[in-house]
Image (cartoon, rainbow, N blue to C red; front, side):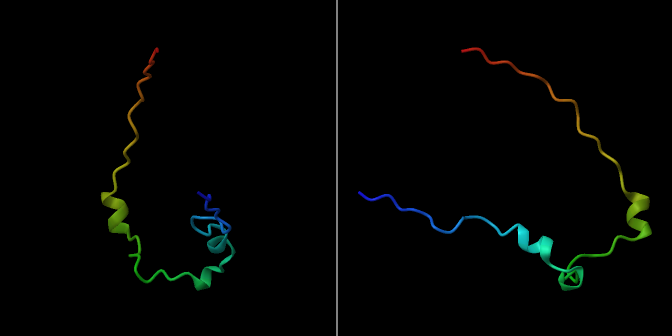
Length: 56
């Protein structure tokens, strides 16, 4: 049985958006943040994490 090799890297092209000029990014489906949004916004900080030790 032969192993299939992947020649092209899998995943997304994360470098492409970084190279893209801001003018080429479509923001039409993202609503603008208004003063009303910030008036009703609530800051929520994460709770402290609890350490757990597992012994084998």
